[in-house]
Every structure is written in C-alpha cells, then in structure tokens.
Image 1 (cartoon, rainbow, N blue to C red):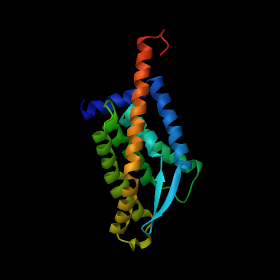
Image 2 (image 1 turned 45 degrees about the horizontal axis):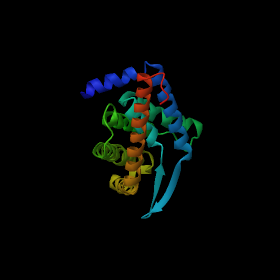
Image 3 (image 1 turned 180 degrees about the horizontal axis):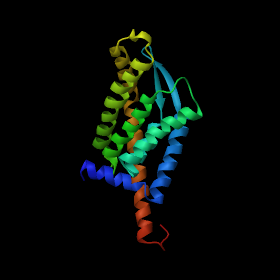
Image 4 (image 1 turned 45 degrees about the vertical axis):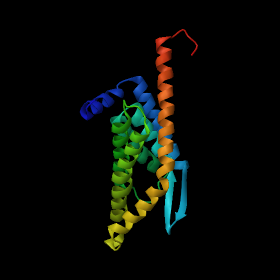
Length: 197
C-alpha cells in the first residue's frame, strides 16, 4: 500500500463509529498517561523524563493509521495542558505530538508488528521528533537571549533518548502484539457470531 493510500484510508477510519470511539478512548488514555505516568530521573547531570504517553499514540497509529494518530498526539498535548498547565503553552510540542502520530501511523498501520518495524518506527520518531525537534523547541522557548547553543540541548536530548531506547521499543512491540491478538479475536467473532470464542 502506498503512503498516500495509507493516509486516505486512515482518514476514512474516523467516519466509522468504531474509529471515532477507538480514537476518543486512546486520546483519553494519552491524556491520563501524560498527566500521571511520568518519572524524572537524574542522569549524567541531566534530568531524563520517562513517560508512557507515547503508547496510545503508537496504538492509534497501529489500529487507525496516521491521521487519527496525529489527532491523538496533537489533541493529547493540548488537553493535557488545559487540564494541568505547567508554564507557558508551547505549540511546538503539539506539532511534535502530531508528527509522532504520523510516524507511528505510517510504520504500523495495516502492517504486521515486527521487531525491525518497531525499531525503524521508534528510531525515526526519536531522531526527528524527540531529539532534533525537541531540542529545537527547548532552544527556542527555554533559552533567554539564546545564550546556550543548540548543540547543548541536542546532547541532552540524545542522553534522554538513549536511556529510554530499550524500554520504549519493548513496550511498543508488546502493545502491538496485544492489539494484533485483539484484532484477530474480533475477526473470529465476526466470522462466527454464535460461537463462544
């Protein structure tokens, strides 16, 4: 399937009751995890924030595709800020949330979840969004007078990403396999509505 078809097919997911419901539930989970499933670790003179908020975005990418996953990523950031604002609102992180959904949607939608696909999707997201782009948002918005060079923020992001590498990939792989099993069970129930599967 071409990426254009993947994009249009995922947009059509939002026309079904199942797609809207699944997207809304994953958005709610994204907000809750973003607010409560966080830990900050001091490492190498930096603080590394570990969060499970990426999982519902990856799940939306796998189940519904890039367009709904972009909405879950972007709206999740906005709603988390509205519910529990901490400092000024930074639209850059909303853009990052949308891009994370886009990447995971292209990586997993209508594809079997395999270790190489998980590693590829994770690395694409981590390099583009969580490293270079996040460093840029920190450089732009938390750097009065631009006294600290961009490279300093980049090194900090590389350390953060390196610490989260294995746990996040394992969580995405496990979640993807769980979603595949749930999807198979749903198809079996549709095929045999009177059976007790």
